[in-house]
Each structure stands twice: as structure tokens, then as C-alpha cells.
Image (cartoon, rainbow, N blue to C red):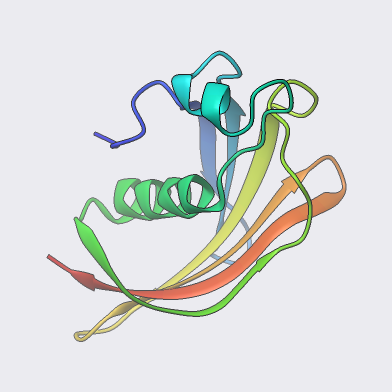
Length: 123
């Protein structure tokens, strides 16, 4: 269960031809977080978007993960849940005995909102 209770809904998650995953989510524009971030102009907090990627990776792997490093995190567009609540997350996961490496691109329509490469350890 995510710490982001009711923040988003996972609509689908499918394995793609190249072994990655493509997930569709819908943000909840009436969530409490958006009342403070920011009143009258809601923006999805970057840390929440990173948590969604972690949640999704845990769901795919059926394992609990702990973030150990974030090598490359780029927030490239503002995600306003009133204007663009539907997001696509493209996730590539590689796993070895030591760590799980996740690369993500989050989009709304054709617009890239987030690109990140992070490492997790399995807990």
C-alpha cells in the first residue's frame, strides 16, 4: 500500500515488447496535497512523483524497495492535476543481487514531465 493514499489511481500496467513496463495513472485533483501545493494552482510535488515510480516498481517486482541513490532526476514540465490528471509512466527495471535499477519517463500526452534513473535496495 502506498503512503500516497488516494493521491492517484493505477489504471493499467503492461509489459512492453522491449521488456519495460508502461503504466497509466490518474491523479486525484481533490487530494489534500494539492490544497497546499499550491492553493489555486495545484502542482504534483516531485517527491510524490518519485514515490509513484517506487510504488509501481514494487508492484511489478512484488518486493519492497528502499531508495539508495538518485543519479539523474529531471523535472521537465509542471504536472497540474486539474489540466493533465492522466499520466503515462514508462519504467525499465533491471535487478541484480545487490540492487534494483529503475529508469522512468513520465508523460502527459506527448509532454515529458519527469525523467529519472534511481537505485533501490530490496528490503
